[in-house]
Image 1 (tube, one colour):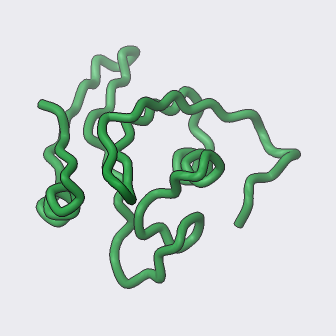
Image 2: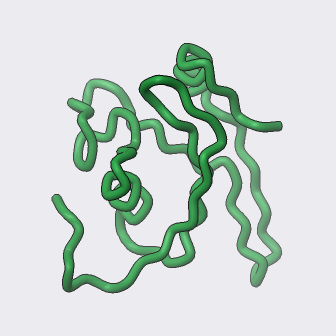
Length: 101
C-alpha cells in the first residue's frame, strides 16, 4: 500500500520524545481520522512504525509498535490514558528509550 495522491487530506502533528541509533520514540497527534493515517505519515517521513508489515519492514511475526497512550475527545468529556504494554516497554528499554511520565 502507498499514500494515495488523490485521497483526502490528512494531518498528523508529531514530536520526537527520544531517539537511539536505530529508532525514535514519537508522540503523534492526528488531527484528522483517515485509515492508517499515522502509519502512512510515519513511513512518509522515513520513520515507519517498528514491525509494521504493511508500511514498514515488519514480516508479521511481531505486532507493530504503535500504542494509543492517551485519547482525548473533549466534546464527549473523554480523556483516557493507557499504560505501555509490557512487550513494548521491553523494546523501548532495549533501545534505551523511555516513555515520559
